[in-house]
Image (tube, rainbow, N blue to C red; front, side):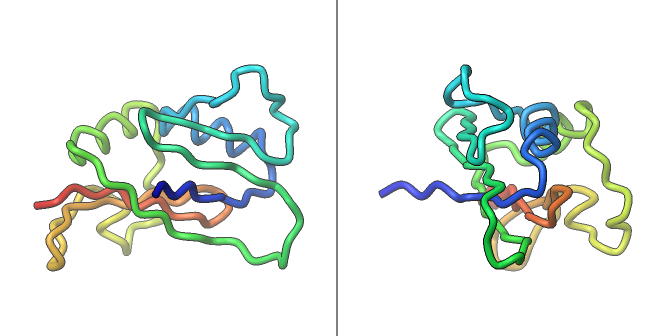
Length: 122
């Protein structure tokens, strides 16, 4: 079984810039238009869909993503321009944190309130 989260966004072009430019995803179908209602993105075996379909108006899903080098990934995102301002009260948004449930993780929240939780087993 494989799960592919659908991440709602208000503007696909803006979300594409964040997910490809900062997080390193690529379009699954390179010829897909930036104006499509749904855009499939991949990075290795990971896949997400960005969607600007109308719905109930609610935004803000959380997606857990397991990685092998959480500290290196956080540094890579910072080097690409990840902005951690606005999350001063949230240590997990400011860098990897060892959680009591056995995961070292950091969070990245996009402009639409969707939070990606990158974690590595301790």
